[in-house]
Picture 1 (cartoon, helix red, strand yellow):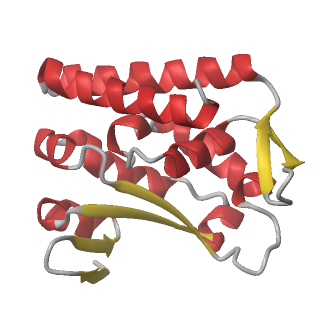
Picture 2 (cartoon, one colour):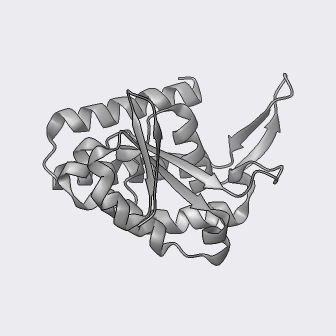
Length: 186
């Protein structure tokens, strides 16, 4: 078990492997899913899926960690591309997603996190903005819509399976809708 703690007096962040996560998840306020370049290049999704399954397999973790998961891709800092432009990163996340689609229940519900997830799960292209800032455009909005629907359905099934009730479903769907409106300006 590997454990690394950080945080202030208000929030505790625990970074660990799957074994440690099960033991410590109840004490963490934020869960950082750190995926390393080594894992990505080796194509080993098993450990990542195991870490995520710890969150979704137990009701207390599902309830406690609603909206607390941060996705971090490590080892690409020297690469000038954004993570969604790196084919092996997108391919890895898509493979993980085939085994664990509960992102929208657990993921921190900020536009940055959800946008990164959707960019990794669907095809994007880089566009220049007037300010010269890098931005991305989804190539196929139908694919984005169908993937978002699939993710929402998976989160709904997770909430129903663990009997978290209508309030949890309302929070998830309301938060996701707000993030999507922010992302797409609707």
